[in-house]
Amino acid sequence: MTKFYSGVLGIVLTVAALPASAQVPAVLKSLPRASAQIDRAAVTAALRPQPLRAVMPLLKTGHAPMLPLPAPIPATIRSSVFTVQATPESKHKGSAFAVNIDGRVWGVTARHVMDDINHTPYMTFPGENGVPVTLEAKPSKESSAAGADLALFEIPPQALPYLRPLELEDELPAAHSVLSSSGFAHGNFLSQPVREVLFASRYRILTKYVQSNAPMNGYCGAPLLQNGKVAGVHIGSLLADKSQSADWFSGTLSQFNAKAHDLSIAVPAFWLRALARQASGAYTPQEGIPLVFNGLQIMRLQPTDTIGFIMQLRDGRVVKKLPRYPFMDFAHLETFFDVQPGDSFRLEIQSGGRMYPGRQTYWYEWTAGKNNITQTIRK
Image 1 (cartoon, one colour):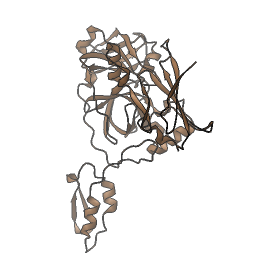
Image 2 (tube, helix red, strand yellow; image 1 turned 45 degrees about the vertical axis):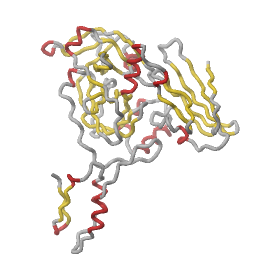
Image 3 (tube, one colour; image 1 turned 90 degrees about the vertical axis):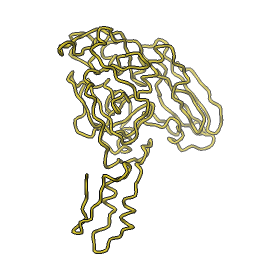
Image 4 (cartoon, rainbow, N blue to C red; image 1 turned 30 degrees about the vertical axis):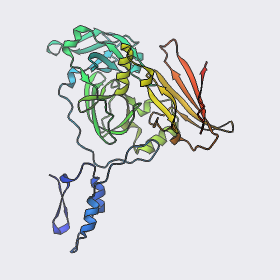
């Protein structure tokens, strides 16, 4: 039990009895100075539970000064993760893991890892007596590298006895909760026990490394774990998104009060289930993520879709152009703009990727206050 002592009076405050949402450092700052007269009302007010501030896009958020203890990394995680590479002899390896989705076992990695290994994965895992075994797997379903950035592939039947599939976590992690991850850095097994959640939506999860041991090359494709279940898939650091401007980076780092090397991005498990349903023919477009502007649903984002930009026009002139921004509230796109009556908006969606022959670019256009969405196919 943790205790704090105030001056020579020996006043004991039992912090362990506080609700989990209480902010302990704020309590310490608010306590009255020790004196012969104790202001009990002030002490009571200081100890009143204060809910953590929710992480909201494009707002200054701050951090919960005291993190909850992370759930332990499953002891069996080493038998759930493995490496993927282009050839059995390749030294360049990415991370992957086995997961059970609706009764079917899949191998999972990041889509851009598949790009790196020419979409022909060989998987390596410990076999009998820990001796490495390398088997060829076949890719089954891939999303867009700039969108969901996930790939599912069939695991060879002979590999299944050596792998322990993980389960999906359907609930998004809460702001300031602590997750863990396990994967491979330069082909060597590595666990990250403490990753604080700064932002979570069905599109992206942003986490902060609490310790200064951020993963190295090869960690993309590692599972992000919440209570031992897959909450998301690690796809890289914030610095890996080279399509963004310097202003975007500075604004994002300021928003989350962090350094670029501390931040990593994951794709939530929602998209894993969507891809698995697509592969089985059970998925419908209505399962996509709604993009909503002032209550008007513009479209539903699909696993193979990527947001290009959102543009605001006034009297035919561009007022603001927001590039692809992963940490946004898709249910309230209007919060990113100073909207005036008559303003028009344009949303660019790229459907499919380099591997899709039917790749298309769409413009969705509408006017504030009017229900007049138009869709245009761009060439």
